[in-house]
Length: 102
Image 1: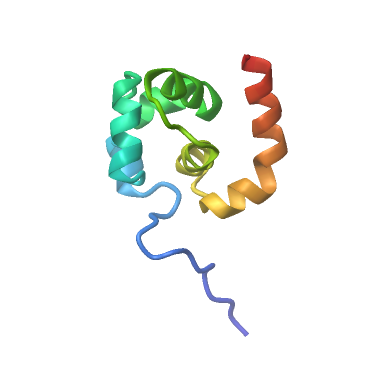
Image 2: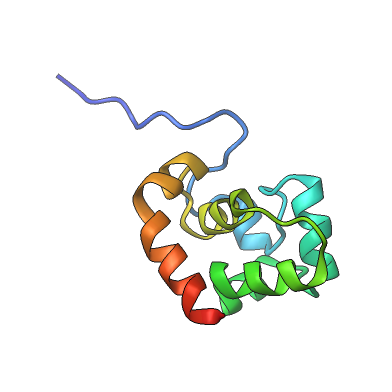
């Protein structure tokens, strides 16, 4: 019996997809990309260099309304995991790291 490849959400590229190689942030919704741009983050390379938590902190400082779903989305973009999975599996670590930035 052969196993089928894991299912992923429609519209979410797999790890190593071309958008990651091109260095853009098209996996994020337009509002998230706009908020990141206000924080001076314009590419996937810049996001990788900062990491999800530092990028979130900078984005919070540059925008009025930034919620934790953005943190999950940033980590999702970096790891290739769905945001809900990131929230379930990495929430505590991300929040502890965020608390350490204060």
